Length: 260
Image (cartoon, rainbow, N blue to C red; front, side):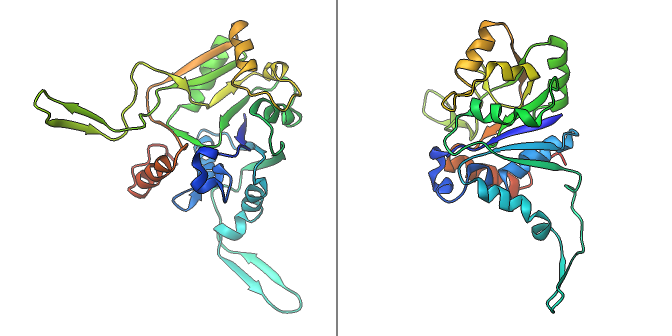
């Protein structure tokens, strides 16, 4: 399936980073979070990507335009007849990436509507945000989506706590400290959606419409929104502290999403 990734927002809650680059280009280790998301999908066999660009989208274009240059050893001939030779290879050579300009200030529903032309009629597709990592079983979510035959299946996840949780006894002694607790009884939309082509019927040509409002409300009203429950790791990158957390677990070799 083709994978549509929303990459156009301004990421104002992460202004420490997004003042200089789009949020999907904020690095985790040596690569942007967008690369980590794409590598995760590719692990499940989904290697056709459509990126909905907006704010500072030229930086994402430059990243992929120079991908070979930045990932391979290179020999250059500096004479009057310059030659360029890439020596090494990389694992992403079978990817295809469509870089679609969906407007500077467009909301999410309109961005998705604008890439409809890249998805053949009747073909389902995958959809997610460019700022969240998880261990969601992509292919299991697809199988469940195909069984329930709804227009859209969202991954329902437990949000990680913003603050560490403490277990304290009556005397005030702390017995446990959990840096990233999860709310066991609450679910949120974690992205990583599976969509029927009919989703486009719920999207208008109005650039001010957010997918998470009118279209989702209409899907709920029509009984066409389904949830794929995920009980494992899911972590957005909305704040500088979350960026630091994701970089730390990557540097320690403990990144749950690294399955490739």
